[in-house]
Image (cartoon, rainbow, N blue to C red; front, side, top):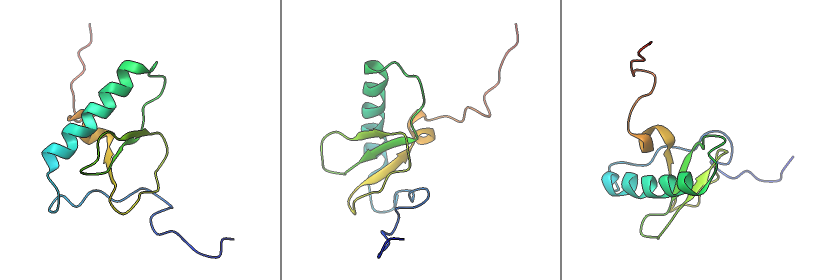
Amino acid sequence: MPSFEIRGAAGVPATPRWDRIDSRALIRAARRVYFSHLSESSGARDPLGVVLAPGQPGGRVVFEPPVLLPEEEFIELELIRGRNTRGRRRWKV
């Protein structure tokens, strides 16, 4: 048992505070990181999302729930892809 707990280290990270950031710019940056990852990897498994630090270049694709630094934001894959795959119609041929 650890002698202290790191807030946010367990479970799913909180969603960004959309009222405090430029959401379009943050999602656009997350998409750049994600699509760069897709072009460079085999794409064997889907990541959970992207971690970005606003004002910093780049970011990282994460496959497990991340522990975030105070200035970092976690953008879920559903927001990056920009559409709900569950509601999409599938046509049978």
